[in-house]
Image (cartoon, rainbow, N blue to C red; front, side, top):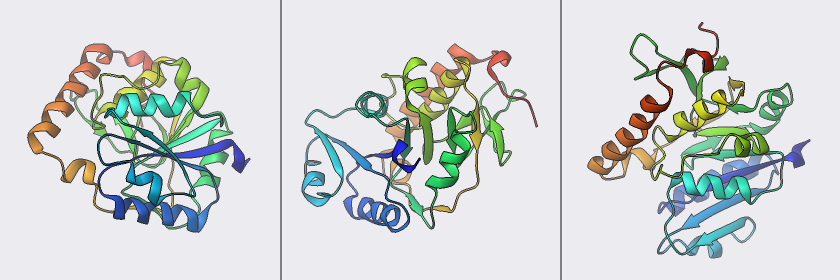
Length: 226
């Protein structure tokens, strides 16, 4: 069953921390890893990570396009979309695969329920169980289902809130999402803390505005409240 899943990371410019992430994965599992690198200077990933599958695109691609490339150019049944700030402290793949095989189309480490009282503007972490939303710190997907649901929105050039949009697209297509406890830890999240704050807020707002426009009020796509 382990051969049915691939771990996918989208490269950033923090190659030392990226190396630490991959080392932690390799210490605890032997699942294949794909690294998607795009933009100036990121060809160095091909030299640094010779043991992994490195896909390099000269033109910079945003989060949505990168996720869709990985979905459409892999052959495994399941893909884990994972941030390089997430560190394995033991095997996180086996329990994830077990839950996916129980009939869930997405399984993740962090997530929650849409806060309806807050007019869909926030997510409440309710812990382990079925959820509306999973975040891309560690997000395992049924690859073909995600493709059939339309994948990630290509307009999402930045990850923040784009994983919420992807989750709700999956729910709208009939997916069941499950938040699971895993032996992972998060170190400094460069995608949030080390980007220009004006860019971060602008792109995050754009992503969330799309969510509100497309999904707010669609209680039919939400999981049971708890």
